[in-house]
Image 1: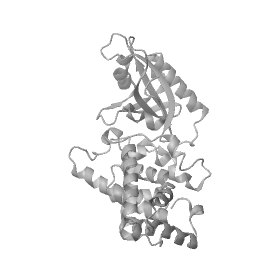
Image 2: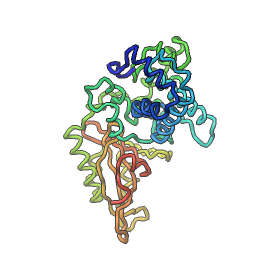
Image 3: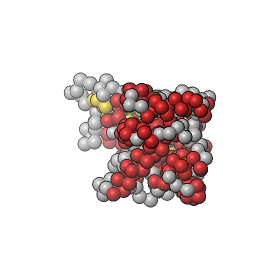
Image 4: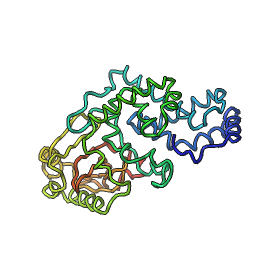
Length: 348
């Protein structure tokens, strides 16, 4: 699972086990924090929420500290932490399902996989934090943050799997664990893990867009993609709705988690967002400024607005874009409360 090149040897494992079981909280925290970035990505895949992933990593470390006497060194410390993190996420998923105020997600939308609007807790994940796990594609842990398994469409779709199917898929197909190791982590039989994995893969084939792998380019943005992003920012700042039309595909899709609205089709999207750019319109929200960023290995734009009487532009929203054939095929719009996680200012 992950970077086998950095796994400790037998004597080192014994030393780690002794350090973990000691009462030195500072030493324990130092050991555990080595795995914080990848554990948070793991929790994020399980939960679909950036904020929940932060909370569950903290919960993982608390549980690990309380259970440190149970670590015998038969597995790596990393695998032990993954087991605790997975179970912490499974517990949260179970609580979500019992809480009627938190929808568990409905059936997937046709022709688009698990719609973000059907996962109201879906949140974006900053690329600069993904880079802490795999600084470049040559590292052994690059698969942990591979684009095709961190994009919003994938994240939204796997939220519709059962908790066990989701865990099996992430452990085996994303992290590369053998079914035997996943079974150990999940306290399940190998047969049940394989069965959950088969059902999860079938669901992905049914719900993910048929051309998913075709719209998963290399991690680094191409110049074409950067140019498209610049045009998107420019036409937005200049309220050029006609130019915006040219950037969208015919069947473009706009969603705004946690709101339930789905706007499908270029003209439908333009009819919805056009009035916000028109002075005098009841929907007008002022002048726009935008800052480029990246989320989930996708291009993203932080948007700020300013009314005529205001001295500064204030954080308004974060658009995460999916690009295909040099056209924007999907815009997922989020509220700005995660701007600090993206190192974005609240005003400009």
